[in-house]
Image (tube, rainbow, N blue to C red; front, side, top):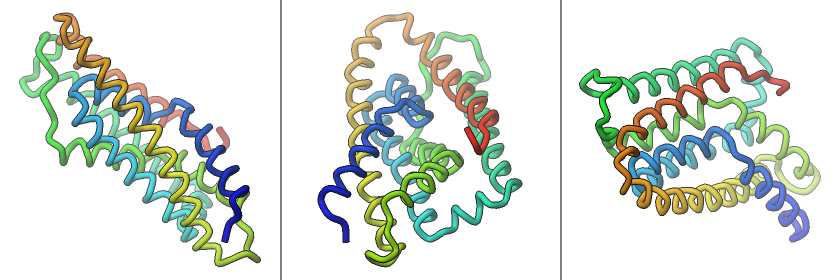
Length: 211
């Protein structure tokens, strides 16, 4: 279906994009620094599944239909921003409502970490735009069914991105072990994670289709 040169070029393009910091990087870093390697890996599994959702949707053509309707695009973008703002508020406020108390960030269970990772990717329409912009450059309708080509390229891109992201989590986890020895970190971690969620919400709410 694809020759080695085409796949190598696509993998290289995917690697460049994967190495570009974005919302998923910030989310994975903040979760890992705040809660450790296991939390980072569970969150990584969630963000990777979210990428897979967009890849399948783009391959099926559903994303193209969605992005053709401006109101649908804006609805997803604003829903994602609202969700991230809610996460920021609940993180900073804490379970007991002591927003300024220097207490450790309450550990989130795996199912919550995974769900947050999935939703962070799915509710980011920029991921859909990425697939629509990149996949068509490497697809030739005369070569094989478009759906099959899109799925193959999507798997390559997700594998590259997943490898980069899991490396990021492991590095952040090693850093977190050193930071955790400092008492000031206990007071900082809640605000770090809350600030990251808030920044992602602002970024997503301000995003434009042609950005």
